[in-house]
Length: 223
Image 1 (cartoon, one colour):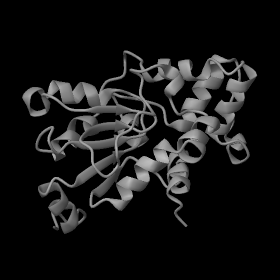
Image 2: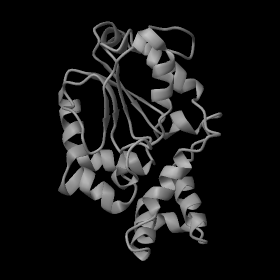
Image 3: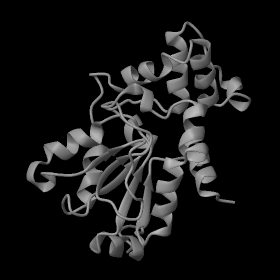
């Protein structure tokens, strides 16, 4: 459907929305805009490093990606601290839902067809959904590692955990990602079932260069 000279919405996307088969996969770009101002993964690594009196340089990213750097910080501090710092950063009281947080839920008619998957840690979607009152009077919330079947779910799925749970469950370091997508594979299994389902997935707020997208590709064995 051609809405403007620059906006053409695929017919399949519209059909999926009408048939309640639409899944929105929300990335960091949704939460980075003002007034959310949630840092992306690289800036998050810089913020955590600052908490330890260290710096994470741009040049380091080539040999030490953010998840690897955060993993090394965690190891140096006895396996504690990094996850809690991330939780604090993502829970700042000055952060508020962005326009995208408010608009994305409107793609769904009610809690019956609500299907949002996010790799973000913040809880802004929950704030917005509750603010909509009767439209989403009751919906399921899934937080890693307790995920539903990817081919049959309703509600919002926090693939990497969120700030409303114990910080140790947040998928932050390379070890966390390894468990989620490789050794234990609960994120991989969810995504495999999701991609093999008849759902239509709309990605919002992701870049091909994101660390998260790299792990998504590994988990799904995309070549």
